[in-house]
Length: 59
Image (cartoon, rainbow, N blue to C red; front, side, top):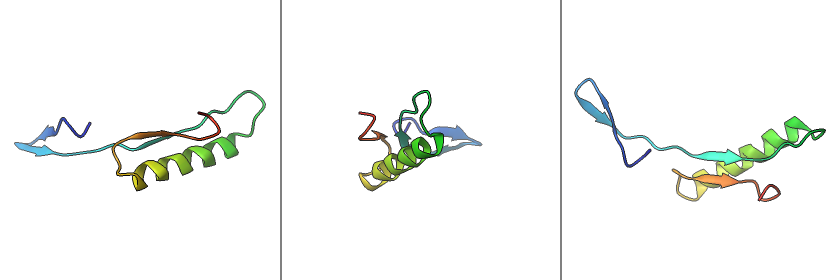
């Protein structure tokens, strides 16, 4: 994403994406999985942004 600026009205807009991933298996608590994904997202941001981090319990 960061390597490809987006053209918009004659300008280039730089963007980056940080993503957090966690698993939620059948019968598990969705709220807990969302909280784990949120923690992974903030870890991605702390580590320099523009990356994907997987919840440690999911990895």
